[in-house]
Image (cartoon, rainbow, N blue to C red; front, side, top):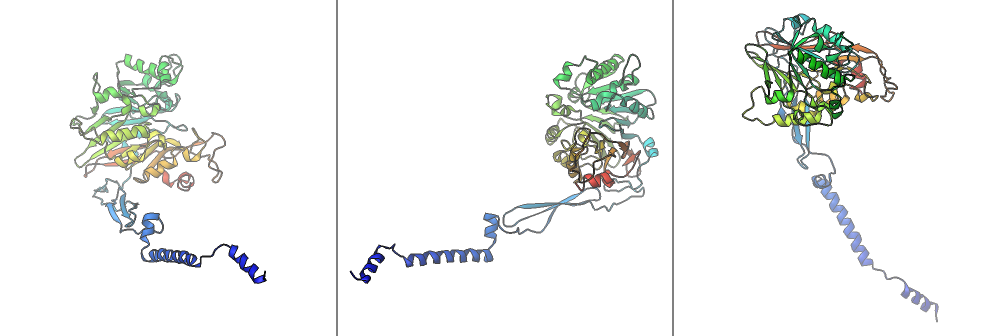
Length: 477
Protein backbone atom coordinates (compact mmCIF):
# COMPACT_ATOMS: atom_id res chain seq x y z
CA UNK A 1 0.00 0.00 0.00
CA UNK A 2 1.34 3.42 -0.94
CA UNK A 3 1.96 6.27 1.58
CA UNK A 4 -0.77 8.24 -0.12
CA UNK A 5 -3.28 5.49 0.49
CA UNK A 6 -2.50 5.35 4.23
CA UNK A 7 -2.92 9.10 4.57
CA UNK A 8 -6.22 8.97 2.81
CA UNK A 9 -7.42 6.36 5.24
CA UNK A 10 -6.49 8.46 8.34
CA UNK A 11 -8.30 11.44 6.85
CA UNK A 12 -11.35 9.35 6.34
CA UNK A 13 -11.44 8.48 10.11
CA UNK A 14 -11.09 12.11 11.34
CA UNK A 15 -14.15 14.13 12.64
CA UNK A 16 -16.14 15.72 9.88
CA UNK A 17 -15.77 19.48 9.48
CA UNK A 18 -18.76 21.85 8.86
CA UNK A 19 -17.35 25.22 7.85
CA UNK A 20 -20.76 26.49 6.71
CA UNK A 21 -22.37 25.90 10.16
CA UNK A 22 -19.51 27.64 11.96
CA UNK A 23 -19.87 30.63 9.66
CA UNK A 24 -23.60 30.79 10.35
CA UNK A 25 -23.10 30.69 14.17
CA UNK A 26 -20.44 33.37 14.07
CA UNK A 27 -22.58 35.52 11.82
CA UNK A 28 -25.61 35.26 14.14
CA UNK A 29 -23.46 36.16 17.17
CA UNK A 30 -22.03 39.19 15.39
CA UNK A 31 -25.49 40.31 14.32
CA UNK A 32 -26.80 39.87 17.90
CA UNK A 33 -23.94 41.90 19.38
CA UNK A 34 -24.38 44.56 16.72
CA UNK A 35 -28.11 44.71 17.39
CA UNK A 36 -27.53 44.96 21.17
CA UNK A 37 -25.03 47.77 20.62
CA UNK A 38 -27.39 49.52 18.24
CA UNK A 39 -30.24 49.35 20.75
CA UNK A 40 -27.90 50.59 23.50
CA UNK A 41 -26.95 53.65 21.46
CA UNK A 42 -30.32 54.29 19.80
CA UNK A 43 -32.77 53.33 22.57
CA UNK A 44 -30.94 52.69 25.87
CA UNK A 45 -34.16 53.13 27.88
CA UNK A 46 -35.10 49.57 26.93
CA UNK A 47 -32.22 48.29 29.04
CA UNK A 48 -33.07 50.72 31.85
CA UNK A 49 -36.72 49.72 31.91
CA UNK A 50 -36.32 45.97 31.81
CA UNK A 51 -32.83 45.37 33.23
CA UNK A 52 -32.34 48.42 35.45
CA UNK A 53 -29.16 49.31 33.58
CA UNK A 54 -28.23 52.93 33.08
CA UNK A 55 -29.22 56.22 34.65
CA UNK A 56 -32.71 57.51 35.37
CA UNK A 57 -34.29 60.07 33.07
CA UNK A 58 -36.18 62.32 35.47
CA UNK A 59 -38.98 64.77 34.85
CA UNK A 60 -38.73 68.31 36.16
CA UNK A 61 -39.22 68.76 39.91
CA UNK A 62 -42.86 69.07 41.00
CA UNK A 63 -43.48 70.98 44.24
CA UNK A 64 -45.98 69.05 46.36
CA UNK A 65 -45.83 71.43 49.32
CA UNK A 66 -44.35 74.92 49.28
CA UNK A 67 -41.99 75.67 52.19
CA UNK A 68 -43.00 78.45 54.53
CA UNK A 69 -41.15 80.40 57.17
CA UNK A 70 -42.14 77.84 59.77
CA UNK A 71 -42.50 74.55 57.90
CA UNK A 72 -40.52 72.47 55.45
CA UNK A 73 -41.80 71.84 51.95
CA UNK A 74 -41.51 68.84 49.67
CA UNK A 75 -40.98 68.24 45.97
CA UNK A 76 -40.67 65.15 43.78
CA UNK A 77 -39.73 63.94 40.32
CA UNK A 78 -40.00 60.60 38.59
CA UNK A 79 -38.14 58.63 35.98
CA UNK A 80 -40.02 58.69 32.67
CA UNK A 81 -38.69 55.23 31.83
CA UNK A 82 -39.06 53.07 34.96
CA UNK A 83 -41.36 55.30 37.02
CA UNK A 84 -39.08 55.40 40.08
CA UNK A 85 -39.84 58.45 42.26
CA UNK A 86 -37.34 60.71 44.00
CA UNK A 87 -38.39 63.07 46.81
CA UNK A 88 -36.66 66.00 48.39
CA UNK A 89 -37.42 68.06 51.50
CA UNK A 90 -37.32 71.82 51.04
CA UNK A 91 -35.99 73.79 53.98
CA UNK A 92 -38.18 76.47 55.59
CA UNK A 93 -37.72 79.83 53.89
CA UNK A 94 -36.91 81.59 57.13
CA UNK A 95 -38.51 84.74 55.76
CA UNK A 96 -41.05 85.66 58.44
CA UNK A 97 -43.84 88.16 57.90
CA UNK A 98 -43.63 90.08 61.16
CA UNK A 99 -46.38 92.26 62.56
CA UNK A 100 -45.89 95.30 64.76
CA UNK A 101 -45.22 93.13 67.82
CA UNK A 102 -42.47 91.19 66.06
CA UNK A 103 -44.64 88.09 65.61
CA UNK A 104 -44.81 86.29 62.27
CA UNK A 105 -48.32 86.47 60.84
CA UNK A 106 -47.85 83.13 59.11
CA UNK A 107 -46.26 80.78 61.66
CA UNK A 108 -46.49 82.67 64.96
CA UNK A 109 -42.71 82.87 65.56
CA UNK A 110 -41.90 85.61 68.08
CA UNK A 111 -38.70 87.47 67.30
CA UNK A 112 -38.58 88.85 70.85
CA UNK A 113 -37.81 85.47 72.40
CA UNK A 114 -38.95 84.22 75.79
CA UNK A 115 -38.27 85.40 79.33
CA UNK A 116 -39.01 84.41 82.90
CA UNK A 117 -41.11 87.56 83.20
CA UNK A 118 -43.10 86.41 80.19
CA UNK A 119 -43.70 83.04 81.84
CA UNK A 120 -44.97 84.72 84.99
CA UNK A 121 -47.33 86.94 83.00
CA UNK A 122 -48.68 84.12 80.82
CA UNK A 123 -52.05 82.55 81.47
CA UNK A 124 -50.84 79.21 80.09
CA UNK A 125 -47.40 77.59 80.33
CA UNK A 126 -45.95 74.07 80.12
CA UNK A 127 -42.81 73.46 82.23
CA UNK A 128 -40.53 70.50 81.48
CA UNK A 129 -38.69 70.27 84.80
CA UNK A 130 -35.00 69.40 84.64
CA UNK A 131 -34.66 66.32 86.87
CA UNK A 132 -30.89 66.04 86.57
CA UNK A 133 -28.74 63.02 85.85
CA UNK A 134 -31.40 60.38 85.16
CA UNK A 135 -34.06 60.40 82.43
CA UNK A 136 -37.54 61.00 83.76
CA UNK A 137 -40.64 63.14 83.36
CA UNK A 138 -42.20 65.74 85.57
CA UNK A 139 -44.23 68.42 83.81
CA UNK A 140 -45.91 71.32 85.57
CA UNK A 141 -48.68 73.21 83.75
CA UNK A 142 -50.07 76.58 84.75
CA UNK A 143 -53.49 76.98 83.14
CA UNK A 144 -55.77 79.92 83.95
CA UNK A 145 -55.71 79.48 87.71
CA UNK A 146 -55.28 75.69 87.56
CA UNK A 147 -52.10 73.97 88.69
CA UNK A 148 -51.48 70.66 86.91
CA UNK A 149 -48.70 68.09 87.30
CA UNK A 150 -48.06 65.31 84.79
CA UNK A 151 -45.75 62.62 86.19
CA UNK A 152 -43.23 62.83 89.02
CA UNK A 153 -39.96 61.06 88.18
CA UNK A 154 -37.25 60.13 88.05
CA UNK A 155 -36.35 58.84 91.50
CA UNK A 156 -37.97 59.02 94.94
CA UNK A 157 -35.34 61.59 95.87
CA UNK A 158 -36.61 63.84 93.03
CA UNK A 159 -39.66 64.70 95.17
CA UNK A 160 -37.87 67.51 96.96
CA UNK A 161 -36.66 69.05 93.69
CA UNK A 162 -40.15 68.88 92.16
CA UNK A 163 -41.86 70.30 95.24
CA UNK A 164 -39.35 73.12 95.36
CA UNK A 165 -40.10 73.97 91.72
CA UNK A 166 -43.84 73.81 92.32
CA UNK A 167 -43.57 76.13 95.31
CA UNK A 168 -42.70 78.97 92.93
CA UNK A 169 -46.07 78.66 91.19
CA UNK A 170 -48.53 76.76 93.40
CA UNK A 171 -49.47 79.30 96.06
CA UNK A 172 -52.48 77.60 97.64
CA UNK A 173 -51.01 74.14 98.28
CA UNK A 174 -53.37 72.49 95.80
CA UNK A 175 -52.90 70.80 92.45
CA UNK A 176 -56.21 70.87 90.59
CA UNK A 177 -55.14 67.96 88.37
CA UNK A 178 -52.46 65.29 88.56
CA UNK A 179 -51.79 62.79 85.78
CA UNK A 180 -49.62 59.67 86.13
CA UNK A 181 -48.96 58.51 82.56
CA UNK A 182 -47.70 54.99 83.27
CA UNK A 183 -46.18 52.80 85.98
CA UNK A 184 -42.44 53.11 85.36
CA UNK A 185 -40.24 54.47 88.13
CA UNK A 186 -38.97 57.44 86.13
CA UNK A 187 -42.55 58.75 85.93
CA UNK A 188 -44.08 57.93 89.32
CA UNK A 189 -41.34 57.54 91.97
CA UNK A 190 -41.59 61.09 93.35
CA UNK A 191 -45.37 60.91 93.79
CA UNK A 192 -44.60 58.86 96.92
CA UNK A 193 -41.03 60.02 97.43
CA UNK A 194 -39.10 58.91 100.47
CA UNK A 195 -41.67 58.22 103.15
CA UNK A 196 -40.09 56.93 106.35
CA UNK A 197 -42.66 57.17 109.14
CA UNK A 198 -44.53 60.47 109.10
CA UNK A 199 -41.82 62.36 107.22
CA UNK A 200 -43.33 61.88 103.76
CA UNK A 201 -41.68 63.82 100.95
CA UNK A 202 -43.82 62.73 97.99
CA UNK A 203 -45.88 65.13 95.89
CA UNK A 204 -49.15 63.35 96.74
CA UNK A 205 -48.39 63.81 100.43
CA UNK A 206 -47.28 67.43 100.17
CA UNK A 207 -50.11 68.78 98.00
CA UNK A 208 -53.86 68.56 98.07
CA UNK A 209 -55.10 67.11 94.77
CA UNK A 210 -58.47 67.77 93.14
CA UNK A 211 -58.52 65.12 90.37
CA UNK A 212 -55.96 62.38 89.75
CA UNK A 213 -55.92 60.60 86.37
CA UNK A 214 -53.77 57.51 86.04
CA UNK A 215 -52.92 54.78 83.55
CA UNK A 216 -55.30 51.84 83.06
CA UNK A 217 -53.02 48.81 82.86
CA UNK A 218 -49.72 47.72 84.34
CA UNK A 219 -47.47 44.74 83.94
CA UNK A 220 -48.88 41.74 85.79
CA UNK A 221 -45.88 41.67 88.10
CA UNK A 222 -46.54 45.22 89.23
CA UNK A 223 -50.27 44.60 89.56
CA UNK A 224 -49.64 41.61 91.82
CA UNK A 225 -47.43 43.74 94.07
CA UNK A 226 -49.73 46.77 94.31
CA UNK A 227 -50.03 46.32 98.09
CA UNK A 228 -46.30 45.79 98.60
CA UNK A 229 -45.15 49.21 99.79
CA UNK A 230 -41.50 48.21 99.49
CA UNK A 231 -41.74 48.63 95.69
CA UNK A 232 -41.92 51.89 93.73
CA UNK A 233 -45.28 50.89 92.29
CA UNK A 234 -46.59 49.78 95.67
CA UNK A 235 -45.56 53.09 97.24
CA UNK A 236 -47.29 54.93 94.40
CA UNK A 237 -50.51 52.97 94.98
CA UNK A 238 -50.35 53.76 98.69
CA UNK A 239 -49.86 57.46 97.93
CA UNK A 240 -52.85 57.44 95.56
CA UNK A 241 -55.00 55.90 98.28
CA UNK A 242 -53.78 58.53 100.71
CA UNK A 243 -54.88 61.24 98.27
CA UNK A 244 -58.22 59.50 97.72
CA UNK A 245 -58.75 59.47 101.46
CA UNK A 246 -58.29 63.25 101.49
CA UNK A 247 -61.03 63.74 98.89
CA UNK A 248 -59.17 63.37 95.59
CA UNK A 249 -61.30 62.08 92.70
CA UNK A 250 -59.31 59.22 91.13
CA UNK A 251 -60.00 58.07 87.56
CA UNK A 252 -58.21 56.07 84.90
CA UNK A 253 -57.54 57.57 81.48
CA UNK A 254 -59.91 55.00 79.98
CA UNK A 255 -62.71 56.20 82.24
CA UNK A 256 -61.95 59.76 81.16
CA UNK A 257 -62.04 58.95 77.47
CA UNK A 258 -65.29 57.03 77.86
CA UNK A 259 -66.79 59.62 80.22
CA UNK A 260 -67.51 57.08 82.96
CA UNK A 261 -68.16 57.58 86.67
CA UNK A 262 -67.81 61.35 86.63
CA UNK A 263 -64.59 61.35 84.62
CA UNK A 264 -64.36 63.57 81.56
CA UNK A 265 -62.68 63.35 78.19
CA UNK A 266 -62.27 67.12 78.17
CA UNK A 267 -61.67 69.53 81.02
CA UNK A 268 -62.14 73.23 80.34
CA UNK A 269 -59.69 75.27 82.39
CA UNK A 270 -61.11 78.77 81.99
CA UNK A 271 -64.54 80.36 82.28
CA UNK A 272 -64.56 81.34 78.61
CA UNK A 273 -64.00 77.68 77.63
CA UNK A 274 -61.12 78.61 75.34
CA UNK A 275 -58.49 76.56 77.20
CA UNK A 276 -58.88 72.81 77.56
CA UNK A 277 -57.08 69.68 78.75
CA UNK A 278 -58.06 66.73 76.56
CA UNK A 279 -57.43 63.06 77.29
CA UNK A 280 -56.86 61.57 73.85
CA UNK A 281 -57.62 58.03 72.73
CA UNK A 282 -55.15 55.23 73.37
CA UNK A 283 -55.85 51.67 72.24
CA UNK A 284 -54.06 50.44 75.35
CA UNK A 285 -56.52 52.04 77.76
CA UNK A 286 -58.60 48.93 77.01
CA UNK A 287 -55.94 46.43 76.00
CA UNK A 288 -52.78 45.10 77.60
CA UNK A 289 -49.42 45.69 75.93
CA UNK A 290 -46.25 43.76 76.68
CA UNK A 291 -44.55 47.16 76.76
CA UNK A 292 -45.55 49.23 79.79
CA UNK A 293 -44.83 52.45 77.87
CA UNK A 294 -47.77 51.87 75.54
CA UNK A 295 -50.18 52.35 78.46
CA UNK A 296 -49.21 56.02 78.67
CA UNK A 297 -51.92 58.63 79.10
CA UNK A 298 -51.95 60.93 76.04
CA UNK A 299 -52.84 64.55 76.76
CA UNK A 300 -53.51 67.47 74.43
CA UNK A 301 -53.79 71.04 75.69
CA UNK A 302 -55.63 73.43 73.39
CA UNK A 303 -55.95 77.21 73.57
CA UNK A 304 -58.21 79.24 71.25
CA UNK A 305 -57.43 82.90 70.65
CA UNK A 306 -58.98 85.52 68.40
CA UNK A 307 -56.79 84.50 65.46
CA UNK A 308 -55.92 80.83 65.80
CA UNK A 309 -55.79 77.71 67.97
CA UNK A 310 -52.60 76.53 69.69
CA UNK A 311 -51.79 72.95 70.71
CA UNK A 312 -49.37 71.24 73.13
CA UNK A 313 -49.06 67.42 72.91
CA UNK A 314 -47.71 65.19 75.72
CA UNK A 315 -47.57 61.43 75.08
CA UNK A 316 -45.61 60.10 78.07
CA UNK A 317 -43.50 57.17 76.88
CA UNK A 318 -45.93 55.98 74.20
CA UNK A 319 -44.06 53.75 71.75
CA UNK A 320 -44.37 53.46 67.96
CA UNK A 321 -47.07 50.78 68.25
CA UNK A 322 -49.25 52.99 70.41
CA UNK A 323 -48.48 56.01 68.21
CA UNK A 324 -49.53 54.09 65.12
CA UNK A 325 -52.86 53.13 66.67
CA UNK A 326 -53.33 56.72 67.83
CA UNK A 327 -52.83 58.04 64.29
CA UNK A 328 -55.07 55.37 62.76
CA UNK A 329 -57.87 56.18 65.20
CA UNK A 330 -57.81 59.90 64.46
CA UNK A 331 -57.48 59.41 60.72
CA UNK A 332 -61.24 58.98 60.67
CA UNK A 333 -63.72 61.68 61.70
CA UNK A 334 -66.76 60.19 63.45
CA UNK A 335 -69.60 62.70 63.72
CA UNK A 336 -69.77 62.12 67.48
CA UNK A 337 -66.21 63.35 67.97
CA UNK A 338 -65.86 66.94 69.21
CA UNK A 339 -63.63 69.59 67.70
CA UNK A 340 -61.20 69.02 70.59
CA UNK A 341 -61.03 65.25 70.17
CA UNK A 342 -58.49 65.44 67.36
CA UNK A 343 -54.81 64.87 66.65
CA UNK A 344 -53.73 68.21 65.13
CA UNK A 345 -50.49 69.83 64.08
CA UNK A 346 -48.91 71.05 67.30
CA UNK A 347 -46.93 74.05 68.46
CA UNK A 348 -45.10 72.05 71.13
CA UNK A 349 -44.40 68.34 71.53
CA UNK A 350 -42.66 66.61 74.42
CA UNK A 351 -40.58 63.97 72.69
CA UNK A 352 -41.97 60.52 73.47
CA UNK A 353 -39.94 58.26 75.77
CA UNK A 354 -37.23 60.86 76.39
CA UNK A 355 -36.25 60.99 72.74
CA UNK A 356 -35.98 57.24 72.24
CA UNK A 357 -35.90 55.97 68.67
CA UNK A 358 -38.75 53.62 69.58
CA UNK A 359 -41.05 56.66 69.89
CA UNK A 360 -41.56 59.87 67.89
CA UNK A 361 -42.19 57.73 64.82
CA UNK A 362 -42.42 59.19 61.35
CA UNK A 363 -46.07 58.12 61.24
CA UNK A 364 -46.92 60.32 64.23
CA UNK A 365 -44.65 63.23 63.31
CA UNK A 366 -46.05 63.41 59.77
CA UNK A 367 -49.44 64.19 61.33
CA UNK A 368 -48.55 66.47 64.26
CA UNK A 369 -45.71 68.33 62.47
CA UNK A 370 -44.30 69.81 65.69
CA UNK A 371 -42.90 73.33 65.63
CA UNK A 372 -40.92 72.87 68.86
CA UNK A 373 -39.77 69.70 70.65
CA UNK A 374 -38.35 69.13 74.14
CA UNK A 375 -36.83 65.90 75.48
CA UNK A 376 -36.71 65.28 79.21
CA UNK A 377 -33.38 63.52 79.55
CA UNK A 378 -29.65 63.90 80.10
CA UNK A 379 -28.47 63.89 76.48
CA UNK A 380 -25.75 61.34 75.81
CA UNK A 381 -25.94 59.68 79.24
CA UNK A 382 -25.30 55.90 79.17
CA UNK A 383 -28.09 55.20 81.65
CA UNK A 384 -29.61 52.36 79.63
CA UNK A 385 -27.06 51.55 76.95
CA UNK A 386 -23.37 51.78 76.17
CA UNK A 387 -24.14 52.31 72.49
CA UNK A 388 -23.62 56.01 71.86
CA UNK A 389 -26.08 56.19 68.95
CA UNK A 390 -28.86 54.94 71.22
CA UNK A 391 -28.36 57.10 74.26
CA UNK A 392 -31.19 59.61 74.69
CA UNK A 393 -32.09 61.27 72.39
CA UNK A 394 -31.36 58.64 69.73
CA UNK A 395 -29.63 59.54 66.50
CA UNK A 396 -32.63 58.27 64.51
CA UNK A 397 -34.94 60.50 66.57
CA UNK A 398 -33.10 63.58 65.35
CA UNK A 399 -33.35 62.27 61.79
CA UNK A 400 -37.13 62.05 62.18
CA UNK A 401 -37.60 65.38 63.98
CA UNK A 402 -35.41 67.43 61.67
CA UNK A 403 -37.86 66.87 58.84
CA UNK A 404 -40.26 69.15 60.72
CA UNK A 405 -38.28 71.45 63.01
CA UNK A 406 -34.82 72.41 64.19
CA UNK A 407 -36.22 73.78 67.45
CA UNK A 408 -35.16 70.77 69.56
CA UNK A 409 -34.24 71.08 73.23
CA UNK A 410 -33.00 68.83 76.07
CA UNK A 411 -33.16 69.41 79.79
CA UNK A 412 -29.70 68.00 80.60
CA UNK A 413 -26.48 66.77 79.03
CA UNK A 414 -23.73 64.32 79.93
CA UNK A 415 -20.31 65.95 79.98
CA UNK A 416 -18.04 62.91 80.35
CA UNK A 417 -18.30 61.17 77.00
CA UNK A 418 -16.13 58.58 75.23
CA UNK A 419 -13.53 59.98 72.82
CA UNK A 420 -14.72 60.46 69.26
CA UNK A 421 -13.45 57.51 67.24
CA UNK A 422 -13.53 55.14 70.22
CA UNK A 423 -16.20 53.07 68.53
CA UNK A 424 -19.01 54.97 70.13
CA UNK A 425 -19.07 52.72 73.21
CA UNK A 426 -18.89 53.55 76.90
CA UNK A 427 -16.57 51.35 78.92
CA UNK A 428 -18.69 51.86 82.05
CA UNK A 429 -21.98 53.54 82.83
CA UNK A 430 -20.66 56.57 84.65
CA UNK A 431 -21.08 60.16 83.60
CA UNK A 432 -21.21 63.70 84.86
CA UNK A 433 -24.32 65.81 84.49
CA UNK A 434 -24.69 69.39 83.33
CA UNK A 435 -27.80 71.37 82.36
CA UNK A 436 -28.32 71.70 78.62
CA UNK A 437 -31.43 73.87 78.33
CA UNK A 438 -32.39 73.22 81.96
CA UNK A 439 -36.05 73.78 82.78
CA UNK A 440 -37.83 74.24 79.45
CA UNK A 441 -41.01 76.33 79.44
CA UNK A 442 -43.34 76.73 76.46
CA UNK A 443 -45.83 79.51 77.11
CA UNK A 444 -48.46 81.59 75.37
CA UNK A 445 -47.78 85.31 75.19
CA UNK A 446 -50.60 87.69 74.38
CA UNK A 447 -50.19 90.23 71.59
CA UNK A 448 -52.25 92.09 69.02
CA UNK A 449 -52.11 89.09 66.66
CA UNK A 450 -53.95 86.81 69.05
CA UNK A 451 -50.98 85.31 70.84
CA UNK A 452 -47.66 83.62 70.15
CA UNK A 453 -45.91 80.60 71.65
CA UNK A 454 -42.57 81.47 73.24
CA UNK A 455 -39.87 79.36 74.84
CA UNK A 456 -37.93 80.11 78.01
CA UNK A 457 -35.02 77.98 79.20
CA UNK A 458 -33.38 78.32 82.61
CA UNK A 459 -29.99 77.42 81.10
CA UNK A 460 -28.98 77.85 77.45
CA UNK A 461 -31.71 79.09 75.13
CA UNK A 462 -29.99 77.61 72.08
CA UNK A 463 -31.30 74.48 70.40
CA UNK A 464 -29.42 71.28 71.27
CA UNK A 465 -28.35 71.26 67.61
CA UNK A 466 -25.84 74.01 68.45
CA UNK A 467 -24.06 71.98 71.14
CA UNK A 468 -20.71 70.25 70.68
CA UNK A 469 -22.33 67.01 71.83
CA UNK A 470 -24.78 67.11 68.93
CA UNK A 471 -22.12 68.09 66.39
CA UNK A 472 -19.77 65.33 67.53
CA UNK A 473 -22.14 62.51 68.42
CA UNK A 474 -25.22 63.02 66.29
CA UNK A 475 -24.78 65.06 63.12
CA UNK A 476 -21.30 63.61 62.52
CA UNK A 477 -22.07 60.09 63.74
